[in-house]
Figure 1 (cartoon, helix red, strand yellow):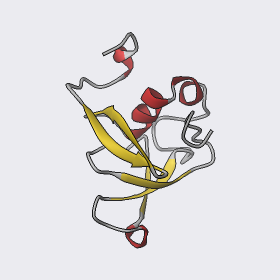
Figure 2 (cartoon, rainbow, N blue to C red):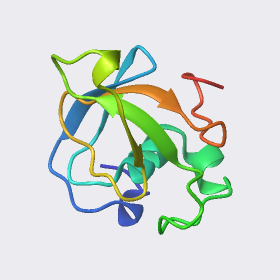
Figure 3 (cartoon, one colour):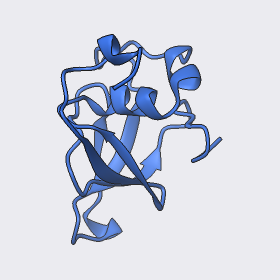
Figure 4 (cartoon, rainbow, N blue to C red):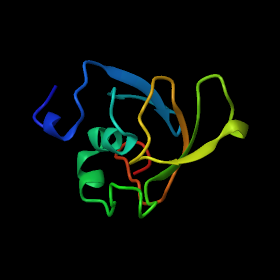
Length: 102
């Protein structure tokens, strides 16, 4: 754990998800927007997000492990809890993750 842990829901381990073809590890038990912040603190912390579902700037498309892009669904990262095996195929243009799409 690190100095920014007060930003995140309590977690005991990191889980593996895929974002735009890249495998990353994020804290379990957290909303996906917080996980994005874990991966790219500066861009997400200073991004223009409402954090409560009103702005829809954190929309993304995903499917579960074992599914394909044909199974993609849309969701809001501020309302969606990360889970092991999640495959994120598309991010709203407002979500900039250093080393992934920035």
